[in-house]
Image (cartoon, rainbow, N blue to C red; front, side, top):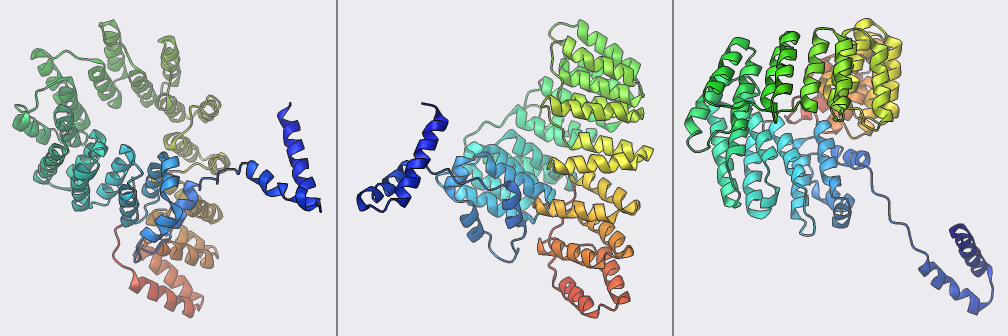
Length: 509
């Protein structure tokens, strides 16, 4: 029997039972209802959950709310929900205490096993706020209770931020503390972890400190191609191409065999210096070597280099060559080609690539949108800029801080605070409180164009989410309220400002 017919007959039987006045037949109704499967309750959206968490007062415990909105069965039925929610809190610049409470709540549930990525995201949130002692404490606790969550990625994130914000010795102390945690958990702590320490310095071009670490620990952690490639990366990031070449030839002299990663680092170094022809020579050399075939990353680097020298036709040929080599272009390759078109002011081709990414299911990211927004702003195509913004919002995309700042600055500079307010409300609806510099721009623009009430509302929304606005936004708002003789609002604003606690305000990432 057809499923639609079955459903129709079932519904008819229920209807007849409901209106039948005979007691015997009416008794069949509960049995029929029991046979009708109830649909599972819909999963709450990340937007909704993030809103509930970010608007929760920081002075109150978050646990009662978490017990209500995230019961153990819900987390168990959707393992990725925890990491998605932590990632949203990270992008929303929510109070760090909320993210830490959420992760600790998940750890406390015996029936739920958090994914390792959730620890990495929590460490990222703590480290960005420079709250390193809680991060160390969390690693120590995890090593005793959930050792399977410890990962190379979590360590890399922690060491990267410690090296960025703290001294050389403090970074070594963090490495030693992590080693003790790994040992307590019964996990190996070897070359990969040592490479994370080297990379923390090399990624910022601090080659001298990286080499000092290498000399200190090389007897404990034998060198391999990853270690030497990381050191080569440090020379590349330092921007000194002569020192970079010298170190590479020193490596080869000592018997080092370059691999695909080595070539990719060298090609990138030449591309960023505008020496695209030298990069192509390296690419040809790489193609001739055995067991050293170019990867998608290699091709993407060359496409990026072609964009730097404003040769979009060559960038396109390199992009097409990815298919010819039996590889599949990813977001990075598309974004590199898009950047090449934008540098050449060919925005039409760039927009066509955006369409192609969506049609093929590759998906766009913040780099895609940011690249096109920058290009449209640079050539003054504001109408197309507004259209792209509307397209992004209609798709529910969540922009990162740099794109939010670009959008807000463009809106406010071009007398469109209405779009700035729309963006603000959109982000608030997603559970994301924009960075306070975005509030500075929006408050000033709204106040100058008769939107004093809306500016006041945005200012209050930031405070309600546990964030501290800048003094600039406060003084601008205060000045306009006084000018409009809104003395009651002036007093309310002053009271809000006095009662603000010195909460952390993480740097944008």
